[in-house]
Length: 298
Image 1 (cartoon, one colour):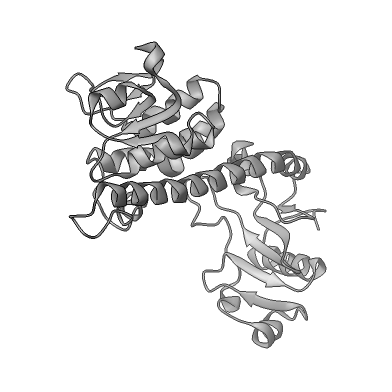
Image 2 (tube, rainbow, N blue to C red):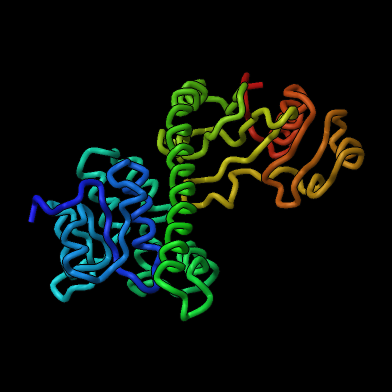
């Protein structure tokens, strides 16, 4: 059997397709373990036997043999082929635990849950987006279905690559977040616009004293409230003043008495100011109004 296997080839079932094998295929492409021109969609045993990787078909789950199916009776886990391949990539040392957790939490576990019927089906999920690539005509040819599958794979590949690139960028910025956190002020002041929230909570942000973030944003500066913990990201520790809610430009300038006022969201979690000095003035106003003792922080 070994001498029949075509290196860097991928096999999955033909007919309709689902997000789990599409994601599995895209991840293997992303890590250059398979070639795009060696993707086969078939249930023919001989064809699948020649593929180096086989996903969502074949009745075998054996990472050692690069077989990732979950439909057989003797498999009682909750992974579909996407989760199986993601776990394989981690166990092969191709990604660390942090990247695994990030991709799994944000996408893959939901794809698997949808495939095995563990979700409630509310809203429009990634799995449903992938399903929309399936040809509308039920009588579409095998060639048309393969072309549709490859379009879905290309879309998913790009999506996963951007997710991975964002993760790497956020990890790269983690040291900057730690440096600002170590100052231990009532606010986090960043001189660059960076992703900060994930790193903040990973570094113990839940017990940090900071209430706000001050950061540049597209030529202006923002004053943004910090959530109480990583699971309550739609909440904030201290809201901006009620009288600022939903105001723009002159209206906000008049109420705040800060010349550089631009906008305050009606949800009172973020406001935009012309300069860093304006944002810090706004912060001082908010803390004073709330009776927060900030000592020499400002």
